[in-house]
Image (cartoon, rainbow, N blue to C red; front, side, top):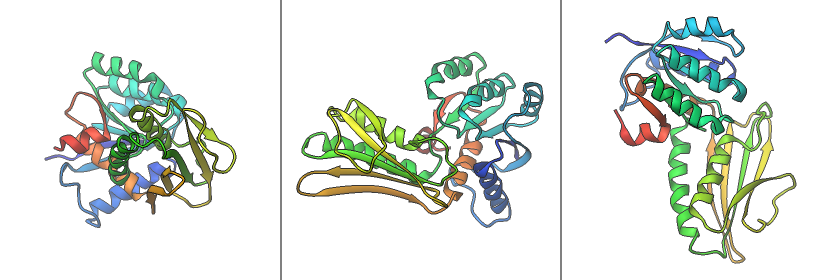
Length: 260
């Protein structure tokens, strides 16, 4: 079987981490995911800001693209990939209000898009646990829910896309919360129907997310700590192997649940 031709759009920290993980896998230093054994061959890397014509030409040269760019560019990149008939894995966050437009383009071009606020398999397992926990704690309103996230100082958005996803997941399952709010001060008690999120920026922190359930008697913590970017890169590569040949709009959870 010929390897799938891969393009990397956005050559920042995550783009370079994906390239390094792919190189390590090709050297046999880490195994190909068991649910998706297709090989990948890196055809090109492009930094964000490339012109539309050059981008369209580049998309036509590959089977799948992994995209880590900026929120303001993500939707145009996705649509351009769909127009070129290229599957695209999107790690950029901050554009999800445009999901209806992406879904329409996906249908119009019979294309394939996989997006996720976080490509770490561990984080997505953490999210599944968190969903169950939110349902349980909804029965016990004495427990107040709050979130905190810590990332490296180069991360521009706050709170993180993963934290927003976690907060919305709680809101969807817990009638005591209708919205989330970023806390500018150290931890404060939740307001009426408001789920507070703390956002911290510290040097050399790949990503830590903590969900806190607190009552006057005790506190239960759920936490995911990323030790490096390799987990995010591995998940993006798994998605790039899984997506080509499919049609539709997918999340990483779809890949994890459906398998090969």
